[in-house]
Image (cartoon, rainbow, N blue to C red; front, top):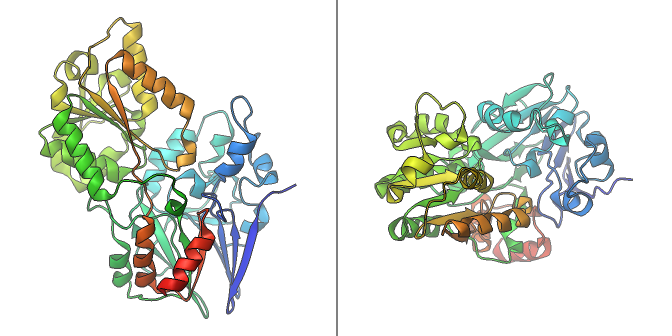
Amino acid sequence: MSQQRVFEHSYGKVKIRVYGGLNEIGGNCVIVEDEDRKIVFDNGIRFSVLRRLYGGRIEPLGPLELRAVGAIPPLEALQGASAIYISHLHLDHTGLLGSITPEVGIKIPSTRVLENTLMSWYRKPGSWLAYVPPDYTAKIEEATSGKEDENRVIALPVSHSCFPAYSFLYTGSDATIFYSGDLRLDPLINISHRLDEVMRGVGVDKVDLALIEGTNFSADHTPATASTFRDYISLMLREYELVSVSIDPLDLEAFMAILDLSMLMGRNLVIGSERLLWAIEEVEKIMPEALDKIYVSEELEIPTPLLLRNISLANEVFKDPKSYVVAIEPVGLLQIFRKLKISGETPDLAGSAVVLMDPEPRESIKEVEEGALRTWLKTFGIQAFRLRLSGHYLPHQFRNIIETIKPKEIIPIHTEEANLMIRLFQRFR
């Protein structure tokens, strides 16, 4: 009894089938069939289904059940494909790579990032999440950035709240197809690219059909832009003592932007979450001069990368709060405060602040968890602020995308406002 919705569309000889992501956010899986070629863009989990059927002690039994209820794409959608191209490593696009049959190749943005994040995090969780990493027999490759590969696909590096991230361009027998994945047009820092720059770099100025995400057309709030994000964090660093920022552990752009701002403000950055440590390899490549401004919290009780030094939050950071910024996940911050409470160490951090940034995808927010975190923060005198920094372009930028890729047709995806996007496209084209 599958609840998977399927949308079919043809452009000349090229046939498109979309599983998930239709009038909903997340769960993207796009099948492209062109004569004797079949490729797949993304393999996502539909959080809308997970939220409806699971919670608390009711957990998925595994891939078979998730397919039966339509939470992940059916196997027949993937069978016969020469490759699955993953745009980025958020679960609503990556899905359960371990449940894909080994004869289908998997192309991802970065094998190193996959190994250091999803494979390390989910390999042995004792639940259905163990299927997130690819099976050891699977063929894993990195997508070819900026160049056409053997399947006539070009991976286009773009900005998103997960690094690295790609849009994809497929040159078919009689149609050029653009698949946006998830993207924002204004990077937080110059480690990612703008879509218009990337399109110029591959010499393409128009496409026939574009599958375009529209996450923020559904937003009931106004996300911060790249410039307002930097202004807001700079304000917090000027006006508050210790500043902690909760960062999605895959959002390297946000991590690097906060590192950059902390250095400008004369502060050191303290990593307080194990899941953020993978970013150090990227810092070493991108901004090696910043390594001596980064510490790892001793309270993590894990081996520290050789390039970094340990520092104690309780004995050093909390005693000189204006000299530091703590980059941390909300759960990691909560764990540290709970340990301090147990040990009888309750520092007075009045005048300090925690910036809670929404994770991506936003469906993964646990309101109970945040409520508990705020309660703990109050006991230490810390003020909490929520900042919504989206990894997606803002609605007014939709016109820029249309003018950049000049599609003849569009299929809205990863949005709850497909009709509005089509109406705007008809006006802008």
